Image 1 (cartoon, rainbow, N blue to C red):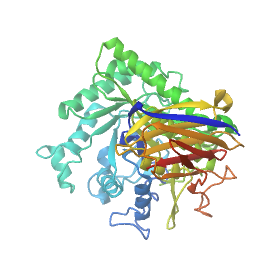
Image 2 (cartoon, helix red, strand yellow; image 1 turned 60 degrees about the horizontal axis):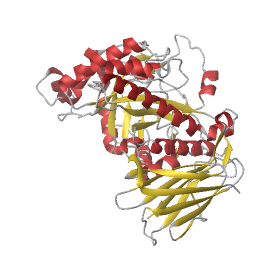
Image 3 (tube, rainbow, N blue to C red; image 1 turned 30 degrees about the vertical axis):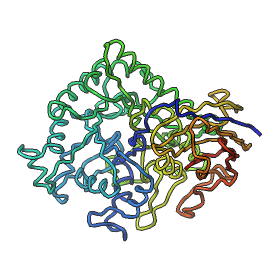
Image 4 (tube, rainbow, N blue to C red; image 1 turned 180 degrees about the vertical axis):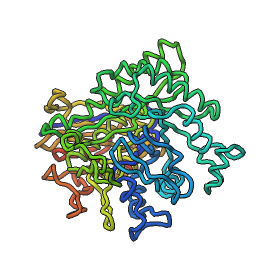
Length: 503
């Protein structure tokens, strides 16, 4: 049986665990908004049409900041279409997803939903087909108290107090040729810097995110970040990162996806720090990892088809991946990578939340349920508090496919202000259990503190939760965990994600 030994010490930390690390993403895409979070005819719908069963699941998931309204959608979006009387709002063609946007849900309605789920709004502006003028108009509408044309327009639309939106994304994936208004790094960097400067003239304390690469496989990756930050370094706070992972028949590589995320984060921070050195700046740019998830993107491209001019459906079923146990294990592993880089990843958004590659699924007029990926996110969001610790690891390795030999166990750990410890573990071995010992001597954890272990695993790594059986997969208690003095020992099943809580 493979073995791994972990050492935790309060003197060796990564950085604070910022709550925005457990953010989400809602885009006007497929059935995410309409028939997902918003279904007025559903028996649980509130007075504005939002499904309360979905609200409760999102609250349980524990998402903090939620990025909105896109995504590719935002690069063709007119924010004005989503305010004012709903009956007077225009129907528009959404070129990003070849759908019809009804604009029944806009900024006011979405804020109402955020208030229900208890999350912060992270708002994206359109720098694809629009620009600086429209961005500052939206900022005036959203954040100025009163006394200007747009703030008074907001008040006439039923909201007297400002939205007080703190975090703003300056466009989306502008490096991608698929993006409406796609630009090269130089042109985008100039536009983002100009927009950021203008927005800060209205509100200097905004937190602004410049677009990084849409993926590490992009031919301009690294160079894009450097060029954009050379233009924007003094004007923004974060550079974005996007990454999706899929099982394409190579389970070993899939289970080692965190190796790729680690490298991605290091490359982006290196580019940012290079520009910092060039500019001799005391300011540090951190990462907003505002799109990450498991997504069968190859299958999506294979199934994509051409539409006729008559085919612009409302809320079609798009990107509705059904997630497996293996997918959940990888999502747990990616959360481990984010915690391991908590010093530089200030914000992260699981993309997306409902129906569209989401941890929550719904059926029109029917139930809402948790996908397998729901469980590692919700438990990590609840347990990962305080400070991320450096984990000193020794032990066996396993074949990581295209990533070579990798540690059989991937891990991260946190300690809260009151001394509660959480250790997150992935066993990457496809067929063998792994014994893990955790040395707590350096934490001074109370010897009588309760030790508990829960996780996701199954004899069938491709088991799913679906409409036919919404509860096939869930959190399981690992009864093997025990503590003797300063040492915790646990046996991890193959292809598993586990959270150990101490105290």
